Image 1: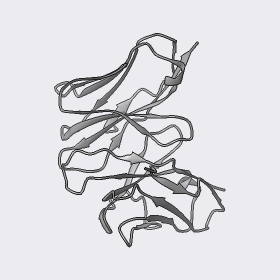
Image 2 (image 1 turned 45 degrees about the horizontal axis):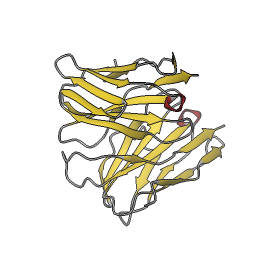
Image 3 (image 1 turned 180 degrees about the vertical axis):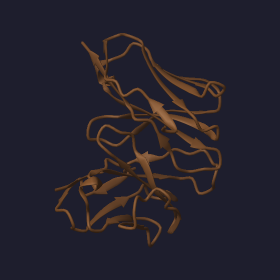
Amino acid sequence: QKEVEQDPGPLSVPEGAIVSLNCTYSNSAFQYFMWYRQYSRKGPELLMYTYSSGNKEDGRFTAQVDKSSKYISLFIRDSQPSDSATYLCAMRAGGGNKLTFGTGTQLKVEL
Amino acid sequence: GAGVSQSPRYKVAKRGQDVALRCDPISGHVSLFWYQQALGQGPEFLTYFQNEAQLDKSGLPSDRFFAERPEGSVSTLKIQRTQQEDSAVYLCASSLAGTKGVTDTQYFGPGTRLTVL
């Protein structure tokens, strides 16, 4: 079993929809949680960075972390075709440096 | 300023050949990471440098993989006697973090797509 589980999709939604992306994890040492966006043939780009449990909002994006359930989410409001990409969750242990990624969820926002 | 750059962007090798992949991190970034991303998968950690010191190489899949960062800036990932299972995108990332536990952002390059025939 992988340390981080993420549904690979693909997920297809109409423009303007609210998108919910999720990851679960098994390693209790993870304290830092990130969401990266990766366009085709590009490197991952950081979207959201949160520490421990709670919510964080940035524009159309909201990240949630529930450490008690070992579950993190990314919500995208008013989704746009330009949001079509693969979304990767990533985690890091306190005191560590390397990131552990999920498989990535492929999202397509259709006109 | 400029982001992380990697070269070549694409590399085709015959099985058994040696390859060298280059990473130019963001200027002034202390930490440098290499990840391997197989098709349809998330990146997987290979190795980590702080300046010129290789502090973690636990993710290198075999002794055919070797990484160096001799002057604490540019890094090279070398794969000897390439195998088909080495085909993947190799991503380099850099960050300002020089101390364990300091929250910091890893900035990724575009990757080198390696295909071994």
